[in-house]
Length: 350
Length: 251
Image 1 (cartoon, rainbow over the protein chains, first blue to last red):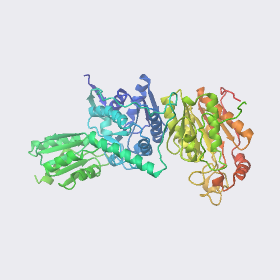
Image 2: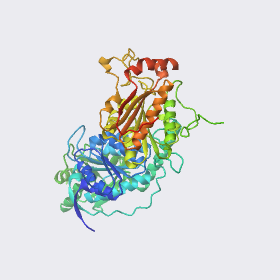
Image 3: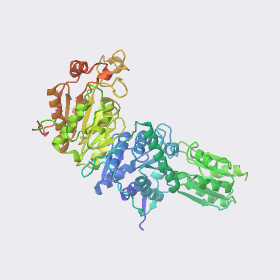
Image 4: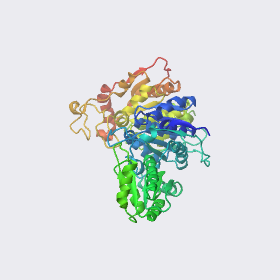
């Protein structure tokens, strides 16, 4: 297979095109604007639609409209823009519309800065918008994985009729790595017979995002959560790396997991046995796998580029069985191998 | 015997949910008549708002997408870009289109998006119980302007149609009322011209429909009609505000 050296932001756009994305709606924001630029060049070549909206809010609702017409759609942004899209994400869930949303996240809160950060974990995984709902969250760690998870994101969005967020960060968006574009063969999907295309040849249909009858809305919410139970059974993905009999289990996703792999290797050189669990799906979260590995290791260190967000899910998964430590850098700062190793040695007393 | 008047095919045979004296039902009937006359029901997609206008999806026998408060023009844009050969319209009240959704309607017009917007202006937030809207007239008492709308605190009535008309992308903009037979005739013509503008790909079209809201104005229906004619129409003059040269003429 041919390898191409590509920036993460360009690669995610190309993968989306190959995955069959028919309409892209975006709004410029650093550090992900190359995604829009790439689409603006490539989509017309494919006879498809690139659209620069007047706002993040408009772009998520244009996506809503195009998805309700049955098309494969994507939008992308970074933290502050994703905040503006949250209303629309809640509505997408309510209308059961598939959509792929990329967040190349940056330092927050507020305008923050444009450096890489993982401080949008809560926003992506815990809802972000109003109401009872979940969004599938995929967390790539390399440009190749960004490509592979983009194919998967479109498939899962259609399969479950639910938005999927690809949660990267400014580092992943801006770095160049060799990638291979190889679209996997996914099982067939049901036809989009719910799509709103005009009623020619059938009875009229409509897409709603409300139910004024409380019994009806509760029933809908229960149905949504049956879907989420199924997602939790079938879609958990993670990687385990390092020693089979570790003294400590490391937990980290995305960019941090790359650093933690180096930590595991460095530690081995100085006689410390470490393992890493890297959640690839942040929702559904690999709780059972994490708990089993944590029990085996006896202690856990969770590392994130934020003040401590995923660590809450790590603690829930471990459920008090072993101690859970946390190391985080925020505001666009990135944990180093040296600092992480020092923390590990302090905890282990080595 | 010859039938000279009947329910339009596109108007579903069921009672409207609207209050006595409200013009939503009449506006929706006119849209249904035009859809029948142009024979476009199979290819037309409506986009709903939030507010009293929301019930339109129950009334018209066409495909509908319902969305968030004020965002209908963006949703309509998404549908239109997905299927450029479909007729796509939004149906929005003044709280929806002239307050929270101002950005979306302005940019739809700026782009010359080939969609039509039908805008029910009753100078108040109807569904939430009669609060002041950007379209409320000066002195109008509402539940959030109990002493009357005062321009020093709350600014001036929002003339959305005139504001949109200055943009090159706006092909057809009209303001109509439904309180007299001759007004109703003109309103139907305007709705038809809006759809024909879209069909011809000439750009953005909007018809503002002044409507009484007796419940929230605290009047009986007849008083509300008279109050609209006496107080609302002078602030929001009726007529075609923008007509691009190529717009087809209809009767």
